[in-house]
Image 1 (cartoon, each protein chain N blue to C red):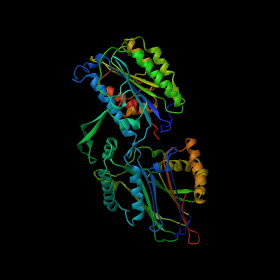
Image 2: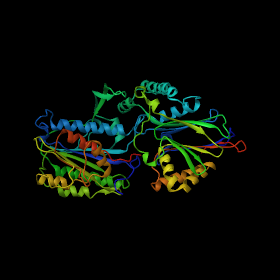
Image 3: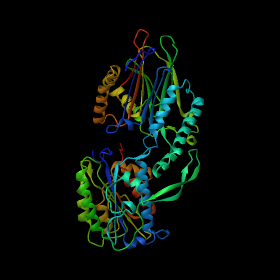
Image 4: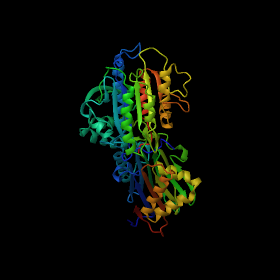
Length: 278
Length: 262
């Protein structure tokens, strides 16, 4: 059965965060929101990395069940880690934990275990900063990911296949991305093909479409292109969606169109939930 | 290792998940011949430092002469939890460990104690919280399994023993407390969740495999037990999880009594 491989230190899996960092990401996120898309996405990715590290923490050790890459595309295309991990790809999560760019102090609301909520000061790690400039060279970005995953998949034949979480707010400015995306989808491990999930966000107030099972309600060719290069959600991911109150149909694709801030947060949470950690 | 002890013959096994080191096992076993107390704890992998919490619970529960009622369990859990807090607060932890430590550790716990002699055998008392189980077998019949007896009931995030004193409110009342009488020949098994679910499922599906496990345990065949576990994991009949087994056979005075760690 595909997507059932146990994830362990000897058979880790791989996450690629593929982020649109074009100039339009500097726009506000929706009409009611004061936050810029680039700021929000950077914050969500930092939170997602934080959650992944916490999930892999056993006492004082972080077990490297995952390898993490962050690719940004806009004025340039390449690794988007800032700080000590700048320029790196496939970083073991243990090293991600040890080497954030900085630790910020934040207040977190937590359960006190007795039905109440307490505010607690926590150290919040930052690995990427918001970036927004240039066009949307999606083809070039996909090609970089293809190269990364070709190598990784060949070296990890028995692992749970890589997951690519792609976020964009607009159409490609360097050509039609389908063919290169299909090359990514042709890769995989003995446990299944690469999981490519796509999340489109919009500055306009438009109806969002989350995890559709067919393309009947998609508004245009761009939406249909992203739908067709998105993989159906395996069972563990559908379960994660269900736990967030999102009921998906059998065959639902890992695809969001016109996503709002809530959709983006859920997209990254669902996409980083492959089960079966050893 | 075999030595003479009362009229209980005991074997126990502790195995980590396949592919992990023994030192990474988060299950723990407590076996005390002097107090005639036996227990298994299963530290929750997703929580912080749960293996240590499981070891602390088993060590102290087995060494005690009480801790069989919710009134006794509550202050005991609090004292041990405070000990864990103190240990963590003394250290300068990296950001991820500090945050995870805020949530504390969790573990399932099942304990079994034997007392005196009734007509032909001792009486027993047990406490249990979570999904580590006690199975009381007489010949081929399971007389009792607790706190879970249905193999389908595993895997649903049961209430566990939290280390954080602030999370322990009402937990002592959630323990299952049970007791009864045993006869010579009765077998008691303390099992962590994966092997408990496997055991209870095979009671109806393939009892011969259970007999094989017990035969291997009784003959102190550690390699045989490991091979059986490994084969069951490979066949995906047994979840790849830490394994803790304590098997207690009630012997008549005429039978030799042993304690064996495999």
